Length: 223
Image 1 (spheres, rainbow, N blue to C red):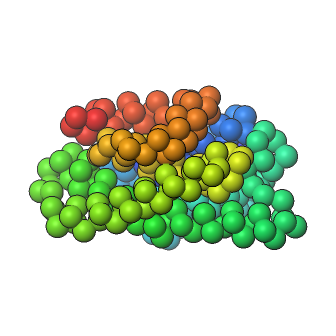
Image 2 (cartoon, helix red, strand yellow):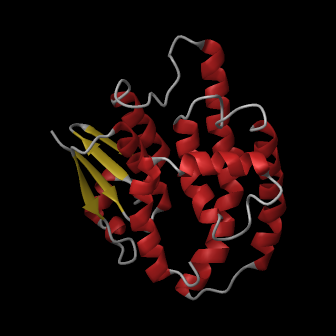
């Protein structure tokens, strides 16, 4: 049965599962375009599958998942032995501990501050809402601290979490990319810059990013 992936080019979170599929070279799946501007993800039918009405959403036989990181993890496990592994060996406690530490840090230290900045810098002007400067003033210093920590950590490793490209990098990449449209992330952070040049130079990333770029260029001023 063909996998169905509900996604939108305006949902940068959708890039996570799309990037896993691209890295694995998996083409046998169906994209179900979801217009989030007209609320197609808020219909009763969609809420039956995604209880918070969010994209991306995946349906693979009797498996129905929402939340981009969960979907990406599922796909990485499903196609574990196809393409780059992306996940650590299950019986390696040390590597797994480090891996999941970095996975959690992406949510708790990076994404939690990055998303409000994106919302005020890109989304607010696009929908005609006033920018809340207090939100920016609250989250920018905390995001800066996180970026400094990432830059320092990357002095000792090639990728986030270790020496191999993995699902950790994939989880950081979509939000990191959109943030580059909001602020200068790499000035004075040579290790972070080197990492970004490496991961964003991958063929899979180049494949999945164009639809998002095209959609945001039409929807957001100064993209």
